Length: 87
Image (cartoon, rainbow, N blue to C red; front, side, top):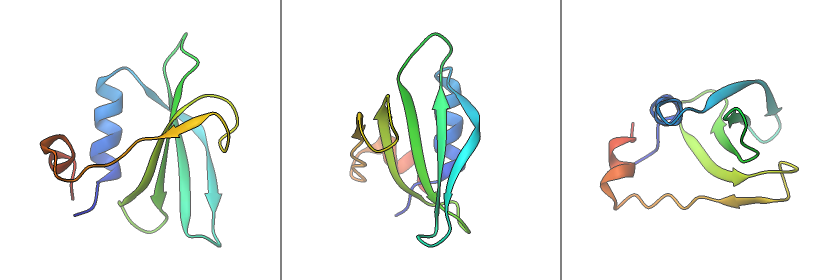
């Protein structure tokens, strides 16, 4: 079971987050990082997904550098919340 980027993006937008214009693309590794933020809030979500797919690799929440200051969000596929976001 894999998490759908489109469904998770809709979930974040329902919470008031907007996708930022810029992305980080790592062609050699095969994934892109998308950033979601709220106005007047310092914390952001970083969602990493495969380039040629709708599959989410990882989700991070925090602020600062994309590599420091973020905590990884555990995707527990046994819970109904994540099952609803599956492809």
